[in-house]
Image (cartoon, rainbow, N blue to C red; front, side):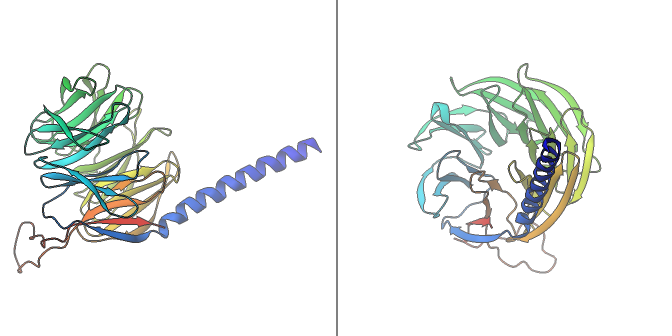
Length: 342
């Protein structure tokens, strides 16, 4: 009797786990645009960020960062004079936030509660992606033109290290255990940086993936998800040894991706106007489950891990004449944030 009961319990647990996996994968197929938040001012954009444990979303926008209520889209303020801003990072324990200002070549430091600017820190050339590494307790910034990483100590707002990576760093993530992984766009590789010694330790090829842009990580399964924009491919890499685990098709024009650790879904934001949803069945099993319509130009993305909603900046553009080259002109006042969910 006891043995049969134990077997039944195990079978029940397996069935429940299988059902949950199927439900998580199915959830990606039901995604759609729930809301559109309009921001009337002009200017380009890059990254968007959700402040943890808050109701605020931070949007890079030309020469400032707009701060919105993530539930209503109402304006909660802005951070000025962030020339060519790319990204935003948060250090809640110190009540600080940071922006990477590409054209200014610095990082703006601001009070996380009041949004008041408290200072700037000189970085490398053309600072782009930025994030807070909880392991080293440092702000890490990818500098595209000087081809290096800047590490800032938020306790002092001083640069503590500059790490060359041998190419243009596009995005970086941490395994939260001393390793930082960097997408090097012009070398088609991941560079592994030791967050304790500030040294580049390895260069791992992403080929056949080309021009990696978005990068996300599953710290539990130790898998990296590199979105390669030039050939519409998501490359899954083993974060322990650089081995390529899987290669999956994604939409065109991807510039960002993210991973939902609860639903085990990877989302790539494709500038063509889609989100590709890839489900992680196990550490070595990945399946494209959906391509969700969004809006052309929605190429970067942020995940709210509490609500599982996705936030994507986009805009409307003027029609181009046949044979015209370069980026089309953005329609004035058309900048917007798409909120995508179930």
